[in-house]
Image (cartoon, rainbow, N blue to C red; front, side, top):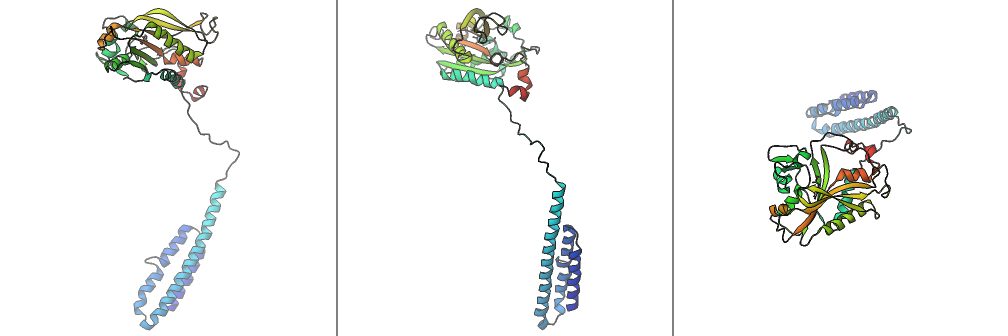
Length: 339
Ligand code: DAH
């Protein structure tokens, strides 16, 4: 028994020394100390040892086991060091390489302009509401006093889903949806995406954004419309900004107008920016048509109101002096970062 033990010890120590990798070392451990390892097998043979000698032999086996475990541990540390050393040699760090930059996005000029418009109107007590982009023909046209054969339908090249459903061509249907809820008075703006079957060029896109505005209360007059929109223009383009209203036609307002602002680039003298006129067209507006009020169950004898619609891209392009709308949809971060 003793010789056998001696033999195992020598052989194991030899193989531990000779091991050249952690994997190889592990194999040595298993073959001597594992469940079916040589030392374990030897312990199973204890039955044949005389009972009085058993404690002694047991002790000897344990000593050899401890010795081998220590030797394995020591060799393992050596092999691990060597492995780390080799890895470090392979992974040379070049501190002169440029660092990896964290690419952060940027707020879109549309978003910046919209937040500015919202800030102005919320400051005047308006609520911001939303309506669906896929809209009923009824809300987009009929209820806005644009019946089936109305020529205004041709101006707004519509994407039809079917006879009754369209991609909204304007944010004006949100006016109707808000009035229908029956809560008066109303002071709201409704920003959102609109769609028209237009060819893409520097000033057109099949999908763009508008901001609708609506005020309904008792005794609302055109003077309220003018005062509100003049204040809006000043806040948006600067205190010196003047406004001018030109008569226009929209089916859902009467009277209707288009509002121009004095050119914030030249102050109204005329420049390349305002094409020499000193004025820049900015929005459509008017007093809500009595027919529209009636269709929404609001009594035009008791209530009146005004509405307006602004193109968001138009504001962003003007404010940030961008001369091609397509730049707004490319989402090139180098472009967006300028605003
Ligand atoms: N919806 C009109 C358009 O897309 C813009 C507009 C004009 C909205 C007059 C209004 C308004 O609310 O009163 O051309």
